[in-house]
Image 1 (cartoon, one colour):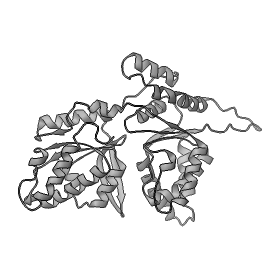
Image 2 (image 1 turned 90 degrees about the horizontal axis):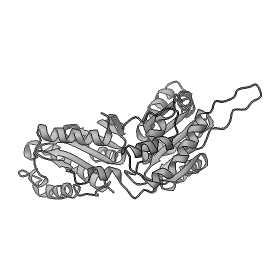
Image 3 (image 1 turned 120 degrees about the vertical axis):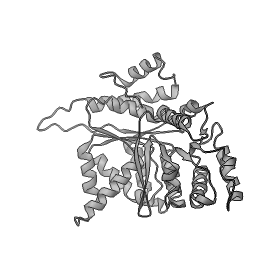
Image 4 (image 1 turned 180 degrees about the vertical axis):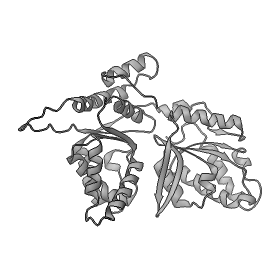
Length: 359
């Protein structure tokens, strides 16, 4: 993701500049949300006049920006964060942030405190004035049970929150266990954040892949270079590891950025992972790149079974898949037990190559 370094200019001025030089395309839906970003930016950059009897102004309302995949939500949020000119801010994927919160709460509980959320929230609030989350989604009951009180304390300490999401607030943690306990968090979002739908008809991520292959074979220097080029084009940076906590275990995905993840076949299928791990991965990412899928058969039967389970999880979650493989889907698994069952996987791999998959 490029850095939009246009100091002392509004987001609108930067947006217009990037359209003029051809970096961005005009998009009325993106244009319509710019005033919300500039509203927050102006409030955050306005010096606070201090005095004995002068009350600090209330922080501005945050922004909950939701809409379909690839509409430019993350791009606009990144541009906003890049324009904060020294305001302490942190931009982080929501899933990764909640992992950190759980880890910090675990450490705090060792000290014997009754309420682990309060000191953890205070630590976060002391480090930033703005939190920018990519892809807010709640699928885990442990997140659902603490997120309301956590954000209530962050808001009380003056932290401004901006988040992107594929779901409107009322659909967060939909059909989740004990969802009635989660409902106050939805009300808190609506109270402390402006909810704005980015209803662009254009899926820029799909457009960038339109007409381009997403399944590269065979595995060689050329296909590896092609995979690198796709990652660079879509992510713009190496990415950071993503750690998924599944039933007390850690599953590490080597590269992750803006809802996109990348891992080699061995990291995903050469380890003792199961359906729960792959379901957690499918919930956490919107696009997955898998490098170096080998030919499958009796010599790597366990890896093949895991690969089938992985593809099923990605398929059901409509995750966009890009991969390099030793052969075409139909020629990956030609001998040994499981060849008949693999026909469905091959069919799904073929279907997932279609333009528009994952929309």
